[in-house]
Amino acid sequence: MAETARAVIETKFGEIEIEFLPDKAPGHVKNFLDLARKGFYDGTTFHRVIPGFMIQGGCPKTKDAKASKSSHGTGGPGHTIKAEFNDTSHRRGVVSMARSSDPDSAGSQFFVCVADSTFLDRQYTAFGRVARGLEVADKIVNAPRDGRDNPNERVDMKVRVVEAGA
Image 1 (cartoon, one colour):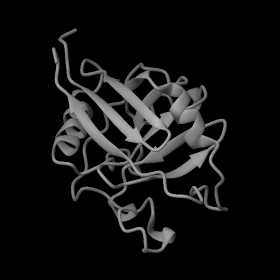
Image 2 (cartoon, rainbow, N blue to C red):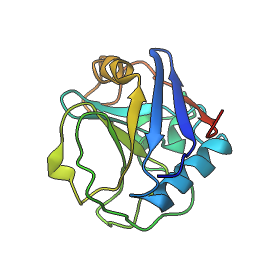
Image 3 (cartoon, rainbow, N blue to C red):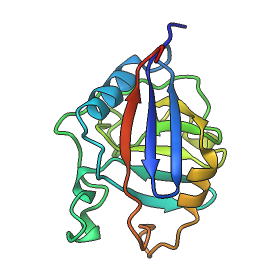
Image 4 (cartoon, one colour):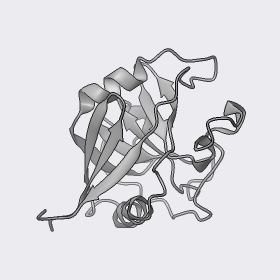
């Protein structure tokens, strides 16, 4: 497999480093890296945390700390990408794209599995895995949350791309 860039998600709990699976989901890897390089994810939050399942982030509607949390999870980058379902199992540490009921509706929102979630296999596009910092995802998923699984306190992210060979 060709060496590819990685992404480091910086949060108040520490860093989560993502290694990508360009051989499994090249369009999703390119989309995530393009958005990250533009700073799209900076200031967004992990807006959905479900213990025993996953943490989800990447919605641009989470950037405004004063806005209602009811809109969290409803935004995207203004485009969608075609599903690239593959044989990567949604095990602990896998990174996958969130979407609506339309399989080709993924845009910017992604999730990190904190537990094996194989019922998602071949229904969501897995495009990476946590290389370092899974304990940070565990801290995020256990943050106190409201009835909509939104953390009570913001868990902002800043995503930086580490280019291959750097």
